[in-house]
Image 1 (cartoon, rainbow, N blue to C red):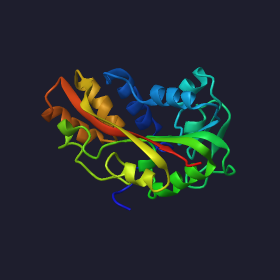
Image 2: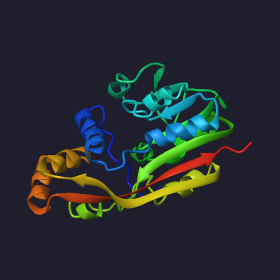
Image 3: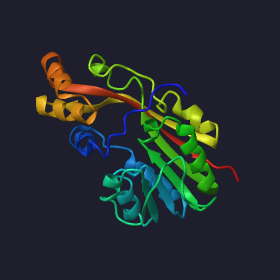
Image 4: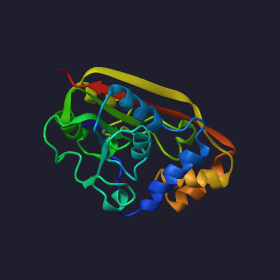
Length: 232
């Protein structure tokens, strides 16, 4: 497997996860993919939907708003505590559901935490009904080029570069929606601090960045949203 998994510190440092969510909510110029994915899953027809690696439920809410049945799954109990039932603590590589019981599976911003994301993709394929839709997304390894000296480019186990091919190993009719545009604006040091905290930078790294980065700063966001269809 190419690249290294991103650290999964949601149990030991939940504040980092919440800083990342807060930075997106405050400083993204266009929002995130969750509402778009929820709408696509709604158009696909009846669920239920499995939200794999649900975190604190950023996809669950827009799915519920659209009248979709959803089951949230995560390994981190601390994350699941914030998600409405039904919810399941489990590993994405060993999903505790029978074959063909979901109309959709979403794995948003989570496969890069796994040393072998192919196992979770295979499990997603298994629990989908024929014709069901799989959705995954991840940033590019070349995301945030303006901060390359702070956060150097690094291949992950699942990113915008290798993710489509990993999905194609299991799914047919794969669609890839890429983004590469100035989509996040950091107006001041507080914004930069929150953003880098969410990206896992230490206090020393944040102070170093604050001394060298010219603000305000608009970041080029790069990544991909990947859909795959389970063949009939």
